[in-house]
Amino acid sequence: MLDYRYQTFLTLVEEMNYTRTAKKLHITQPAVTQHIQYLQNQLEVELVHYEGRQLTITEKGKQLQKDLFLLQKEIQQIQEQLNPKEERPFFTFGATLTIGEYMMPDLIESYMQTYPTHELSMVADNTKSLVDLLKHGKIDFAFVEGEFNQHFFGFHKISTEPFIAVCSEKSFLWKKEQNITDLFSYQLLTREQGSGSRLILETALKNQGIHLDSFIKTMTIGSIGSIKKLVEKNLGITFLYRRAVEEELKNNKLKEIKLKDFTIEHPFHLIYLKETNLKGMKAAKNFMNFIK
Image (cartoon, rainbow, N blue to C red):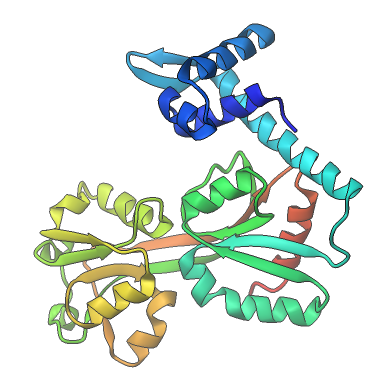
């Protein structure tokens, strides 16, 4: 196990706030300060500092965070080797909601046909949460659609997916090409903060000088299925990966809104902790064999 003061540092980097760090660790705020000062004195480097009233992590601090994550994974692997609990290979991995629901069933079927003795456990969550789980060694690898630190993780691109505007069959928006500004008078249904889908949409809009607030109203919903049902009822429009609405488009329950000069495509990635996570790397490479 890591020294408790290093655990305090990792929590502070995650929370970026001394009060929240103390609350999460069930210690006092002065204790958090003492732990950080102790580490800085011992290591003879500045790990954190304030720019005005904003807490920032120094480059040395960022390097320490990365090294500690890798060290945690090494400790976990040593514990597993000394106390093996599973005779069968067991992997826990993550997938974002879109990938988990619309891509993983076929992949898992192919994988289990080839490796019938392997045991798998899948966590479905948004990109930010999966990245955090991977950093802390809670999962072995993850399939994500959002942004991640490409210097920190090993990764493979598994596909490039179109991200389209969608409306109800009852709407007239699909009947002719629209400008993105034509959609502002409609309620936009979008995923929650931390979702890769939401970040991709926000980034694409920002590149056009547009914010989500440009839409007359927005509704945040954490379920792709619920978003699709509400759009079917003509209660708003949304942006989703084509893969997630293929069935509804085929059955004319939903319609694609063709947009002028506004096209979004984004890669799906398989990511894992590199350098020390040998188990995750091996499992990730096994899965890559089934991705066409």
